[in-house]
Length: 97
Image 1 (cartoon, rainbow, N blue to C red):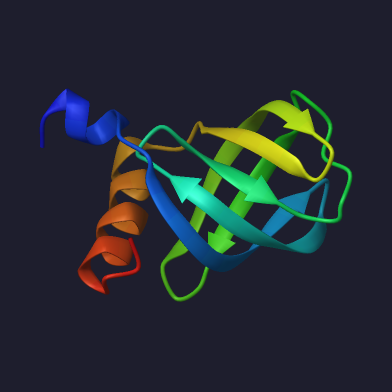
Image 2 (tube, rainbow, N blue to C red):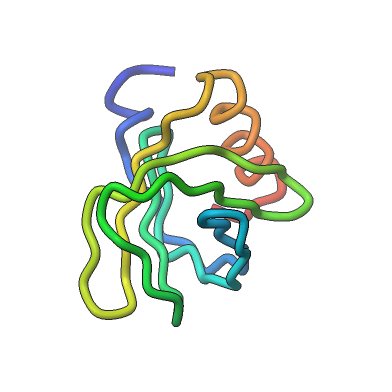
């Protein structure tokens, strides 16, 4: 997969969960790429918070909050590349993206 394809964000409407400091909140994944995702949630997610994003049955990926505005947050993935790729490819194979 080329670097350009890896950077492209795919619009999504996926239900997920974001865990911050051991507390899990429901979220909606608005878009996702190999580098990160945009989430919408009612939870307050502070910039620079370490999070885990889970999308069942595709697994979890670790990330860092890079920005937030109202109920939206931008997450930069910080997990091992294989973990990120497994989740994204799983979503793509089930036509979730």
